[in-house]
Structures are given as structure tokens and as C-alpha cells.
Amino acid sequence: EDVKRCGACGGSGVRVVRQQIAPGFVQQMQTTCEECGGKGKKVAHKCPKCKGKKVQSGSETITVDVERGVPDGHEIVYEQQADENPDMKSGDIKFKLRQLPHPLFRRDGKNLKMKMRLSLKEALLGFERKVPHLDGHVVTVSDSGTTQHGHVRKVRGEGMPEHNFPSSKGDLLVEFEV
Image 1 (tube, rainbow, N blue to C red):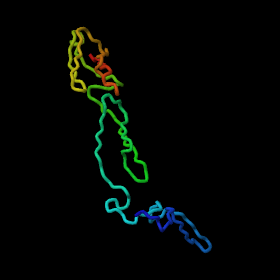
Image 2 (image 1 turned 90 degrees about the vertical axis):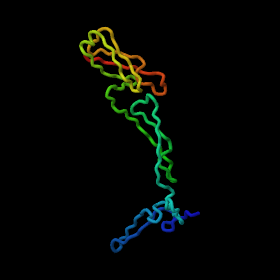
Image 3 (image 1 turned 30 degrees about the vertical axis):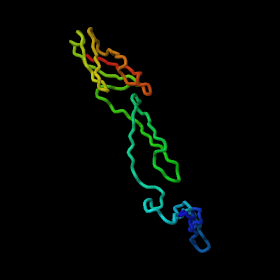
Image 4 (image 1 turned 90 degrees about the horizontal axis):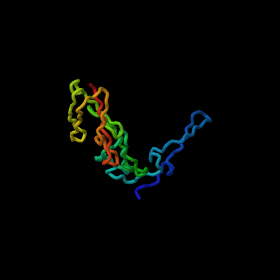
């Protein structure tokens, strides 16, 4: 009941302005109505909180749960959670995940890759190393024989969990540098 048709434009949202630019020449322009902002309606008694705009400013904190094994570039979408406006449908909030580089591991799909330096003595006589994994547990990498430079050892099940199937994991691929 407080929303009335704009009297300045007759509810059309536009006004026709005529201007004489020279004797016998009249220019006619159509412009957005300044009274109603092109909406064709005006609020008679404006709300003190929103000042008649039908929206209020505010902020909200969103907690985003990132599932195990989510790949780089994955999007998490909160549908219809963006800004609201009475004249429009609320949009979506989208988070695009980017993985940061790690000093020890490099991700390759489900697999994790790493390089391990060995001394000549370790390469010839064997070695045992403890590697702290991303989730905090310790992985033991060892060999009792000789290890060549560039050799890649696969440690099964010590890679990244597969998204939506966290019990399925990739492998840890260790490349040796002698």
C-alpha cells in the first residue's frame, strides 16, 4: 500500500523531454525517470532501516568444508546464497579451490611425488628413512640393496585419498637422487 505509481512518469519509468534547439527544430529525448529511478513505482513512506530500497547491508560468515582428496580447481557452490534483491533471483556463491605448493610433496592426481637424496653409502649399502606424511603419520621408506639415481619407488596406498571415495588412495612415488 506504500508503493505507489510514479506521478512524474505515469508508471512507465521513462520521461519524454522536449527541447527546442533552434527556431522550428525540436529535439525529443527519452530518459530514465529521476523520481523513481526507472522503476515506475515510488515508496510513499520509506522504511527507516532500508530507506525504501527493500534491502539492507550486512555480512555473514560462511564456513566452507573441504572434503579429503578434492582436486585442484574444484568448485564448491552454495546455491542462492549470494546477495538478495527483491527484483532479482539470488545468485550463487562459488569457491574455487587452489592448492598451495608443498616443500616436500607434489600432487599428480591421486598420487603424491617426492624426491629423496641419498648419500653414496646409502645408495650402495641400503637405507631407512622416515617421512612425515601430510596427515601427520610417518611413512618408512627403506631398501637393503643398491639404489640407482633416478629410480622411482612406489609406496602403495600412501598417496592422496580419492574424492568421494576416501578409502581409495593413490600411491607415494619416491624418486631417488644419489
